[in-house]
Amino acid sequence: MRAKTKMIHGGITGDEQTGAVSVPIYQVSTYKQDSVGNHRGYEYSRTGNPTRHALETVIANLENGEAGFAFGSGMAAISSVMMLLDADDHILMTDDVYGGTYRLMTSVLNRFHLDHSYVDTSYPDKVEAAIKDNTKALYVETPTNPLLKITDIQKMAEIAKKHDLLLIVDNTFATPYWQQPLDLGADIVLHSATKYIGGHSDVVAGLVVVNSTDLAERLHFIQNSVGGVLGPQDSWLLMRGIKTLALRMEAIEANTKDIVAFLQGHEKVSTIYYPGLADHRGHDIATKQATGFGGMISFDVGNGERAEQVLERTNYFTLAESLGAVESLISLPAKMTHASIPADRRAELGITDGLIRVSVGIEDSADLIEDLQNALK
Ligand SMILES: *Cc1c(COP(=O)(O)O)cnc(C)c1O
Image (cartoon, rainbow, N blue to C red):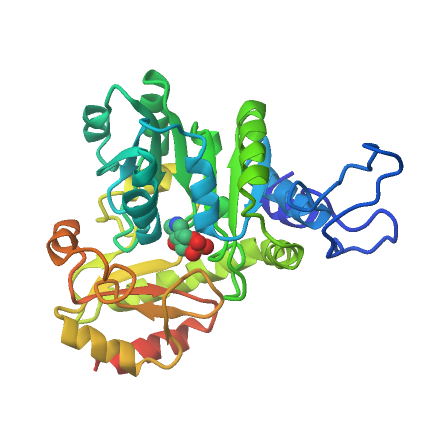
């Protein structure tokens, strides 16, 4: 089954009992047992819920994995994956990981002695040099936010294999429609499903897919023990989102290409970060490991004052954090998503005050371009 068909017919479709073509929302916490210990596959909804199970099955299918897991947020998913590690283990991570992941590692899990450090994973030799005796996992985000840096997943898998590390990939920006990290050698792929998978700015959720029965058993044990599960209504919303994921991603990418072309010709725009551009440092790897470049663009307008003016003047680009929705969003990383990162560290990473990030939606690209044109005047 090809990806577009999987989004409609993959996993569990409809309801056997009634013939309903949509999976019912099983709004239930507990299940009748026919005799003591003799149940029909479900006992208690933290352990398993039929609606959540249908979602977990379709995401496992889409990522070509062994099993899927749905959590109450991307951060709940990431935290649960981190619990596969032990105290005093070291995890090596992409240096510009999502801010929430950075906070989890440096302000929460550090208290449980989970040792971690950051490296620019877009340079494989730097990754190898940063491996320590107690390194047990490699955590990669690609493309990254907001500079859309690309890491070679296959290269990371080679390094992980050589040093016996678990390779974990945050695939939020690419989505399983464009990029399947497990096929490239990763052990675990995870998503903030709040973004493209949900796709409509109406649900907060996280998804994980693992590539082995061993990891599936261990992560299910953690999911059931820690309990950060996704509820049945939100599980249903994600399944609804997945049905149009291919269509949305195609529409978003077509719009993104039009907007990039417009920005390239604009005198007030200096650097443009988009992996689809031939001069982007990660362009060749992005072309090799993904079938699309996505819908995120960052561009520099020179200074913070001008950037803020642009953000205040757009009509169709909503000024908001988050990304990956049908509506276009615009943000200023230095003052919003990345404000908690110290200014010198931001400068090191290349996140300037004039850097604007847009998440392109599915509106008419001509309207989106006019909107940016007016705001940049
Ligand atoms: C948003 C995001 C997260 C966190 O997900 P939540 O659903 O907000 O908890 C993790 N990784 C990336 C790349 C994200 O964009």
